[in-house]
Image (cartoon, rainbow, N blue to C red; front, side, top):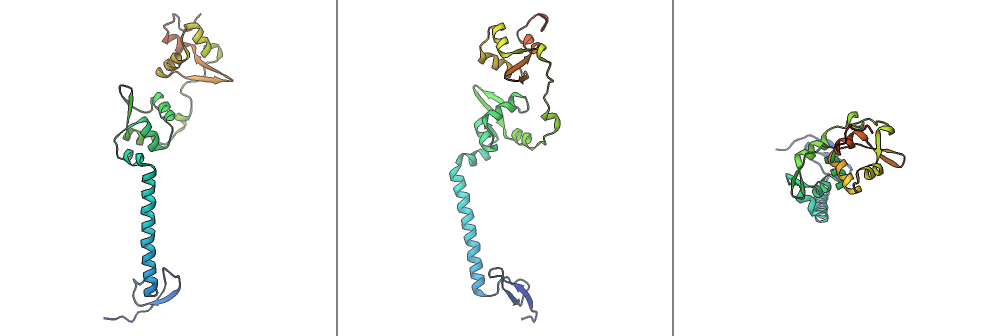
Length: 190
């Protein structure tokens, strides 16, 4: 059963205009059809090869993508951010974690939801206003007054989520926050 329709089309391979006898004809000749098919097969093989190269370059990423629970290193690899940034997010209380001995584990769904939330202005503002220099200690003053090492002080500030304020070359911490931690009577009144 032949048709008498004639449709002007453009060949998908050589881009020349030709007259087709069906609405599904894509190529002007058998040779263009063969070359077009070979081109599609070639592109498919190239994309498979590129994908395989990516998985060979980064095999850990493929393993991490299917896990429900991630370590800090795995989360940093998967989301392309540093480990330190993840620890900062955790210390601000914006991400829930579980501790197994010294190992910290994050649920994948928690990471996904954290990074899918839009950043609003409340996240960009400091959580606590600067109380003023007269109501703050410098880090050195805290170390001298309470006899604490720099590392231990840093851990206390991180653990309690105390805000630090950088003014010039000094870091300041609110006297009230430090006095509460060290149980000073009067909380800041000397």
